[in-house]
Image 1 (cartoon, one colour):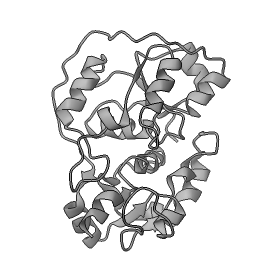
Image 2: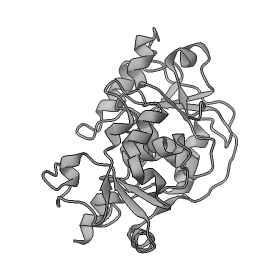
Image 3: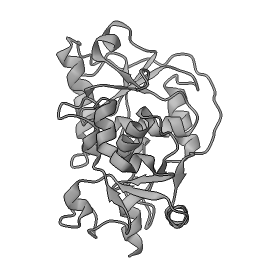
Image 4: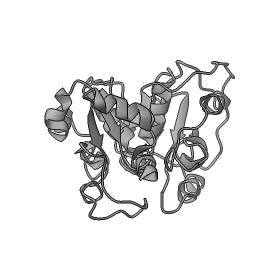
Length: 267
């Protein structure tokens, strides 16, 4: 597995990178992550908000967390001192659920992807890390220009890729995939033809990413598909699955950004 996609807590503590992003968030309480950040975070970390920074405004279609405008996201990164090749670390406390979204977005725009803190904020504390409450100071501003998100499709692109033989992967919990429950979106079920690979299967209960053997077991035969399109409820936790695919050398998978919340808006 690539050794530069994850960072262990002792290394983060001993050799902090120029930029750290705190991505803690709760779908059920959108201000909880920012409050936790205010109470204590990795020294020097900037707070990144899923709803405000990693998603754009909602519309009738496009899902619950549509991608923001690329130039606005680039401006955010630039304001935090990030250029195309800046070393960045990202973390959350939810088994990479939100840090992986940042990872995917930065990689999609051609940035050096952030390393994810293995085990999350809990691992930082367990390793003896001392939380800080001060706000970070940006380094020199380096203009990096704009760009467009790559490796992503909308519902039209999804239908085209599926028609060409792409394998669809639903990253939600099994009961949501089966349509037995749907706590968030108005319609239960899954996109016809999709296989289920719940995103939680990428990590252990303590948030540590499984080794290559464990990740291959998570994916099974799906890993051999010629083309993979990955989705979840709103294009967030699907990025955990995409991160795991990249760890295994599959960097060609596509994110259906609108995911089930977009798909079911057409039903």
